[in-house]
Image 1 (cartoon, rainbow, N blue to C red):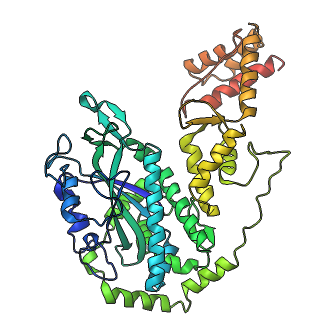
Image 2: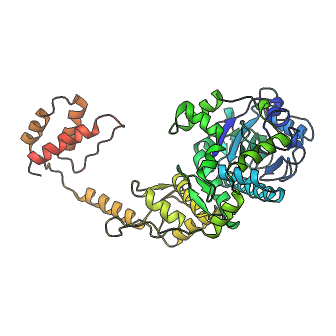
Image 3: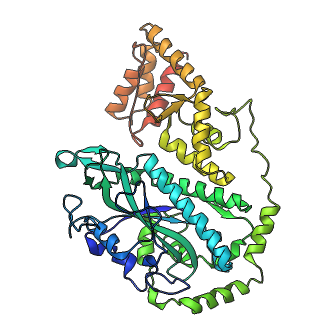
Length: 476
């Protein structure tokens, strides 16, 4: 369950996969053009080109893929036509247990799950807009960037995998047409920040979905790698209905990177036309579910009624006190990050906080609210003065840094190392490079403060061992 991002092709034809492919997925009802019969809907941060929530019609979608106005047929952006990048596909996937419940549900139960899934997708898209992850290109050669006044997304729901397993996910086609901040014209998109924030976007979607599932009284359980599943659904059933995941893992292994799995997914793709659809697919699911002799909905509802928040994590507050006390998402996230970092970036804090929020079923809005409350109480300290803080630290860390800087300024130039001790230490490590030897002499000089900086794998640990030896030989 995550958010994946792929670039589309160019021109009006680039959207054909979403509107023309008769075998694009093995949907249980049919292979008709369900994207254009009301199942596919528009999402927009404004309504100048399309109306948010309205059904997608094929011609409007194709026009926008080509960079043309669906109303006038004229060019909306520079470069519109067959060489215009149509957009980017952001796919939001639900957990496998969600898909199993959908497949096993009545028409009414399926409708409920589809609504909360789309609501979570909408919240994730709002997050994209609110965080300014989409920018437009301005100036000569497009070297300037700014947040647009409007972005347009075509949402296409899918319900099955290429193997015909239930797999609820939504393709969100971010069209390469956005209205400028001053509203005078439309420009092409710069998606770099979306790629950089892809993990955060996935965790935001999970947080939004978990809140809706929590409202339905479902219990959630951790499923590794910051994911969750709906409690009560047996792991054996989840594994059985994960045929595509098994194919990919069989090729590259469970611990493969996202990039490796993406390559494996392409290499192991089967022919959609060979997978049953309609009544045949519904019969297959019914037969496969019946083999377990259990009702997934009953199990999930019982787990929800019996849900237990579980014991709070044991923390030795004397030995390992958290930077920010509490079991709320941002407090847990900040304390975890501050174990290894002095400064919290917005990207890292939001990502970790959304992960914690998803596991607690608390959503996106609570994270923003908690950050505001922690800032107001000065338990989180802003390090910049823009409208939305990009960096934070804590009062205690800021105080320690000030103390360190003051001590550095007050130090008097003198060496704590004996010259003969330095030479003996260097003789004991003849394998050091000239650069490492210069670094040791720099660190043992009479300068009040010495700083050594180098990349990973360049021999810092070996160098420091020689420095420690020089300190010991000097009586330190």
